[in-house]
Amino acid sequence: MSAKLNSKTFLFCLTLLISWLGFIPAQSIATDEWEAITVEPSQDKGILDSLSSFGQKLGFGSGNQGPFIPPEQAFILSADVDDAYNLTVRWDITDGYYLYRDKFRFELIDADGISIQAFELPRGEEKHDENFGLMEVFHNEIEAKLPLQRDNTLATDITLQVKYQGCAEAGFCYPPMKQLLTLSLPKAIGPPPARTSNSSFVSAQDRYANNLAQDSLLLSMLSFFGLGLLLTFTPCVLPMIPILSSIIAGQGSNITTRRAFSLSLIYVLAMALTYTIAGVIAALFGSNLQAAFQNPWVLGSFSAVFVVLALSMFGFYELQMPQTIQNKLTSFSNKQRGGSYVGVAVMGLLSALIVGPCIAAPLAGALIYIGQTGDAVLGAAALFSLSMGMGAPLLLIGTSAGKLIPKAGPWMNTIKAIFGVMLIGVAIWMLERIIPAAIGMALWGILLVVCAVYLGAVERLQPEASGWRKLWKGVGIVTLIYGGMLLIGAASGSKDPLQPLISTCQGDDCGQTTQQHSLAFKQIKGMKGLQQELQLAAAQNKTAMLDFYADWCISCVEMEKKTFSDTGVQAALADTILLQADVTLNDAQDKELLETFGLFGPPSILFFDQSGQELSKFRLMGFLDADGFKTHIAAAQTL
Image 1: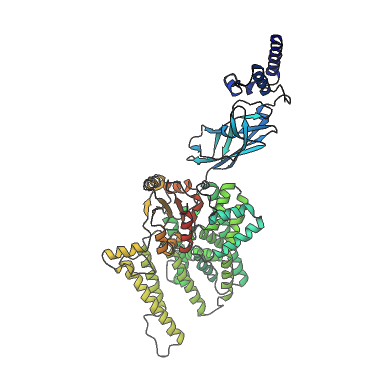
Image 2: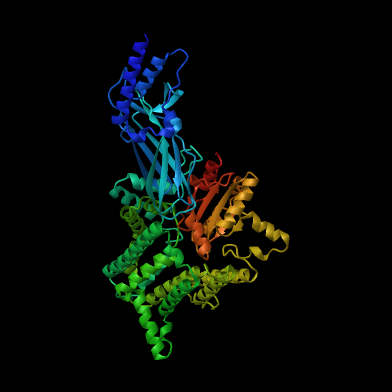
């Protein structure tokens, strides 16, 4: 009995030595990790059974299928960067092997400002393991999605440390394994995907971005062209109608329909190309060219150009000015109003950059797609189609103006005067972004009073006056009265041209009346100011809403007048902390705040939960009416 035992022990030890020298990779069983494959003898097993079991774990004994493969072949590890905020780690598991679900560990090495957030693994298969008991394991393949928290939004390289452990079905367990993977993260120009809700809610801009990723190029261009048509008569595009019409009218009575079409096409193409280039730059580099042009010098200069154009249409350049000044004004006016195609193209370019810096959901969707995928070609095609959709009615109006303009006679002077008034109106509309509201109202009042004088409001009608003459005098009187109301309202501190006399109330009632018509926002400045307010909101266990506003943002003013004034909207936000970031100046703090959240400009509205985390799935870009906004709030508050 003793001889047999010694013989078997000797053979087993010889087998162990051979397997150690020839078949087991040295790195798979380190000395300090020997306990990972050590099996304690059970009470119901003898020494030979225990040794036999131990041998099976090393690849020998009953059921042995040959040498075990190295761990890097048994568990093929790879990792991908899905986007700026997400990693995917994947194992392809060889047949006959498996990985333990509870042995995965992930850590970033030397990644300042970047960390791994809580993640979830899929459910594994239950298996009774001889070493660990009942465990969950993975066969064939396993993917781990790792969301990132990023304070550092710059493009950077990171090192991901991955720990895991697996076994072979034949009875051999590898010791815990560790690998280092180097990955390159792109610049984080968009928000991290929302992880706080399982809701199927998808914001409008995200829906448009997803459509770009899924649809064909032709379908995407057609859909964005249609969306551009819907945006035509928004406040951001409407001012371009008098600009283009004045270019056509400035050509005089000899303009042909063909030339009117050519000038309109040049204007629209220049506008569309500028929108496209500016959009791609904003998406790729986070620099909004349109916002950069919203400063007093640029707006003031462009408004002056419109005034110069308007005065030329009124015929003021025929006054006896010094010949040198008159020639320069006439030459400048002729060039810019369309005397050359280059002048028209310049006007289209400037109109895109200065007149309409609005963010709408389709535009935001295209910018998000470019920023997240880097596919500037498809994104630019969508932006160009959107711009051409916005410009299609302008093309129709410009061509029609060339056909409808009278060929000769005093009517031509009247038409030019009308467009001159419209150009001055555009100049005032632009100046309102940089001047106090009362001064803007006063300018509108002055313009209307002067127009009323030209309409004959203060002239006596002759008994033989025609019906048309009486009609124009009546229009002039109404214009004079409204212009006077604007001047009175401006002098009394009113800010709303549609309700110029509302501020004539006195005392506390006036302030209460104003408060009822708008939300009471608390102003914040920069990321530091936002974080302080979010901490205060979290301490009160309240949600928060952040509104990005700018004086030059027409849609922001529209939101205040049509959406935030709604009593239903105010009731829905009664328990929400209301914050507002005024980014009119577009200074360093404003840019940092916008870039932190991957925003391209106002109007943008963000929602935060009780812990101060953004519900990025519910962020809103562009104008939304009161009913749509109440629905949006209700969806965000169901969390």
